[in-house]
Image (tube, rainbow, N blue to C red):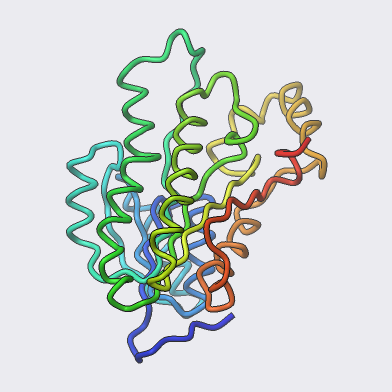
Length: 251
């Protein structure tokens, strides 16, 4: 895939939560496709620097921004710093495990702010440039839990479903401006978020048996579909919720 642009300016892609895991894999892939990548981390600049080094090792260019997206003041400050963005990949999220009866308001607001409200604010900040340029790509990263909610992650799964509903609404509103808006929903992935839970062999086997393909996804398994959606080849795909989950959502 190659980037087709009306000018010689290198297109800029912001990937939130790209200091690790799926976000890092997406950032590296977009850099390979020719985008200048804005790497985002909440606080861990060292890991963001690792992502930038990996991007530069494949011939790409990158810069780093930080913001805790659970804090809306920090999100708003980030919105004022990102400048002209052609591609927005909203990958950052927080996930708290708790029986529904014990969910605190603090945990609720953290997840809603990071997983939904910050996405809306960043889209608002990026859309003006995209609309003026008549070209833009917005991809949110959802979760298989939109279809298969985990009983101990009520707010997380609800926030991801809300984000996808927003994607479908905005896809209709932004299509005439040459902007596509899609959601990619990963299943169970081999990332540091899941290391502890999947280290239990009994639980690990139970989860594996819910996946028709019987193996975990790797971060790179999400990067390809995101790269397609962000390319010129993806210009006719909008308003879609694409599961990358080994079939778990239909099990």
